[in-house]
Structure formats: structure tokens, C-alpha cells
Amino acid sequence: MNDETADRGALSDHVLQAQGMVAAQLGCSMEEALGRLRVRADATGQPLDELALDVLDGIVRFDP
Image 1 (cartoon, rainbow, N blue to C red):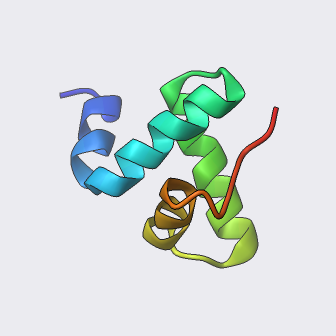
Image 2: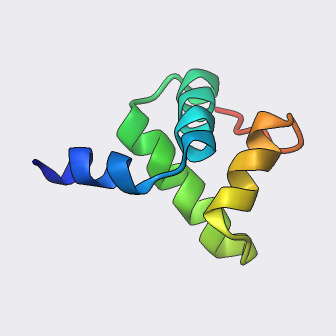
């Protein structure tokens, strides 16, 4: 199992879905999208799971 596979196994379904939405919004890789989610969560002090739900609800968008 590589790091990417292990990382995906540790993420909730809604984080994975948000990762896909961010990748589509930015036109970037899934890895970069997850990195952007993590940076935003860290910068705002919001748990990654909560940020993911906000992305899925359309409250948070990532613009290129």
C-alpha cells in the first residue's frame, strides 16, 4: 500500500467527494485538491471534515 492509498483509506467519504469537487473547480490533481483543502482547514482552524461538508454544500468554493 503506498502513501496515497493509505491516505485515501483514512479520509471520510465526504472529504473524498469534496476533494473531487475542488479538483474540478481548480482543474488540478486530486493530490493538489486535498492539499488545498488541508491548507484551508488549517488556515481557518476548521476541521477538515467540516470544511468538506461546506464544500459539498456550496458554502465554500475554490476559485482558480
